[in-house]
Length: 340
Image 1 (tube, one colour):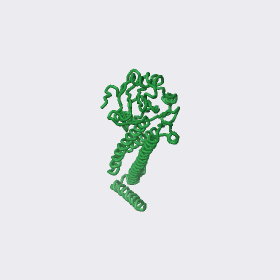
Image 2 (cartoon, helix red, strand yellow):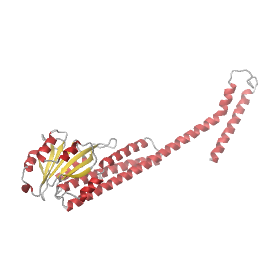
Image 3 (cartoon, one colour):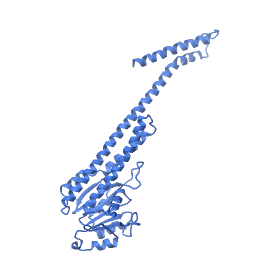
Image 4 (cartoon, one colour):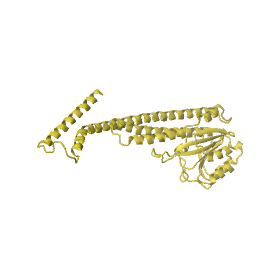
């Protein structure tokens, strides 16, 4: 097993985090920037059947300079590094596959959509990947290479990355489904609490994930219809299959968003029903208290001629009148409720 201790999150002076050399029918071997530079200077005939994967940290300012001077990346790759668009896409430029892949951070949580971008330049014998923050999918790919997964071509390495990203998304969807299940159980048990707010935040995160992670269909269609000449048919088929698997995951994410929407509507309906019930009770109390309020207001005027003021049973007579009107109002409300 290859050890990359000290290289996982840091980088050497050139900005290289890790590099691997792939030879036919052999496990990949770890290389450093000096070894990678020596390999890149070999004649094409001496590289027959081999390719390298170099992963750079863009937080190191030396990375872009090294890639441009020694790796010979296409101008479109350098432009993509500074492009404001972060949508996931794979395009063909100057016989090179330029991929912009959005991935989640190691510290991803549903409370904050931690998403960052990974840029790749893929040719027949050189794969360049670059990022600014550690990402889950690329780390999974590194671990697979370390554990001896046989990868026969640069395109297969890209396909492996896309499938790793799909696996990460599957886990996110499963975790989201578990959260939605708990909210639904609470809803059925009549415990709303803050579930509506939680669902809203979860739905917003899923929408953002889907918007950023969904590959641009037009770019993929053009690539799959006319791939570079150095891409063999088997690699082209695997790339097509990986995009289809990705589409299935995104479809599941869309279904989950629809389920969350329905739950939000159900919770909103329950809240409205409870508010209507509370308002109805308040209305009944107001109607029943209306007679006593009116009579108390009239008898409380500081004017002469207040009836029954000197009568020995004046209080009980007024109380009887108030009780009678209250009973009549209560009967009217109950009758109206039965009619509805």
